[in-house]
Length: 265
Image (cartoon, rainbow, N blue to C red; front, side, top):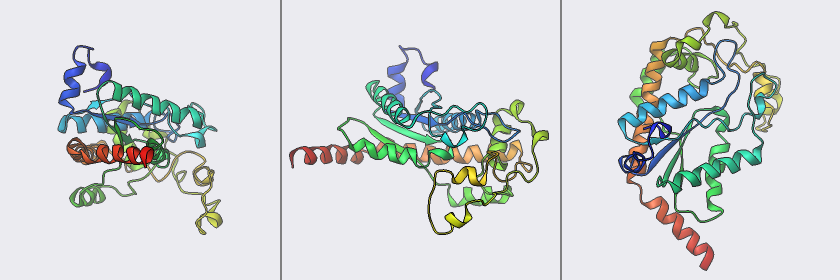
């Protein structure tokens, strides 16, 4: 159930069917090599949520593209939001989601650059009392799903505009994929900060150091069939998480207990 497709009259019933769960796919607008659209993460996140909601009903929040992509500002078309505004806007939409009756908010990762933002945002929920819970969805594949994917894909499953993402977009928006524009070898890491990475030091410029072209791995083996399998398994994993979230009463209880003890000692 996509939020923006519901009428206002339909919305209360949708909240009931979803058992108060709202999926928020977090994506960005950024370069994905020469061959994929800048909305790649949006298309993938939207499709994963759509398929998951067909298995386990949930309301899907409209595409949320205003997340962390400061490292791509050197590429044309990037929409990079100021850090303070990023957090404030995400907090604002969560409060609006909860005000509309959806008290279990699931942030669905559709962009690798949010690997630090989303957990940090979830941790900030302990700053002030609230009557809703924010969950960061990072559901693993089952052992069988993992094995099936590994058997199909020739590269890693964590690329950027590589085999996985390209396959996924081929499955949902093949009209936006330009396989003839792939530059062989351009997705290999340049290793310009290996001396820093090897000692376990993190820097904000690490991605640019390895992938200045905003492309990692190799997209050439991508197919729509692989993409459909990947999306199916991602959706299944998310649906399993949603099922558990629907039954979860303990997180909010503990959250309320925490605030009561913090306030009253």
